[in-house]
Image 1 (tube, helix red, strand yellow):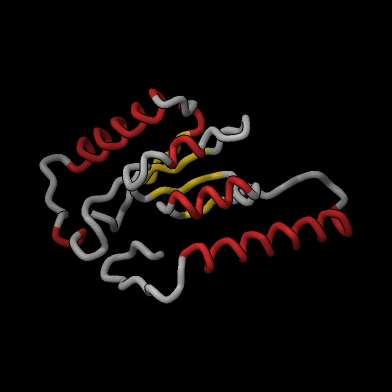
Image 2: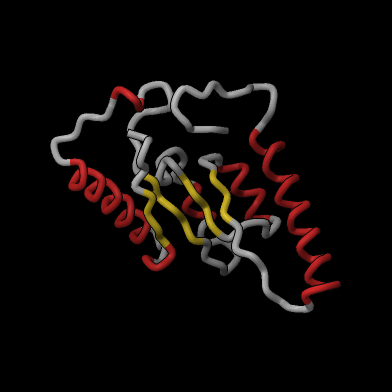
Amino acid sequence: ESAAPFVIPNPKISERDLVVPVLQLFQKEWNDIKNKIVKCDAKPIISIDTINYNVFKECVDNDLVDILNDISACTNNPEIIKLLKKKNKFYSVVLMHKRGNPHTMDKLTNYDNLVYDIKNYLEQRLNFLVLNGIPRYRILFDIGLGFA
């Protein structure tokens, strides 16, 4: 589901139905190429851009991704944090700064101190995840340019 400003979600197509089959096909094709041509154990690092707990859970359960890129900085559903440390594997997470939603973010662009406000928000999210067991080295930031 797009989070770009003014995008209207399409309720007829689920995010899961758009994303998971593509990731599964990519994984299958990569394994075929790896075994036939490349002859190596290397695996590309895959990121999924979602705030949807169920979509990320299915990706984790099927070992389809390595990184969660969450534009809500894990605030949309804090339970998603538990998935970041599932199966003795820590997933990396990209936390994004944003204000509002796709319909309001263009109106929320006034800051007293832009850099301080973004830093403060991301620092709070970082501390929350670390306190919930996510290693600091697994947490990345996206300052969210264009997302208020």
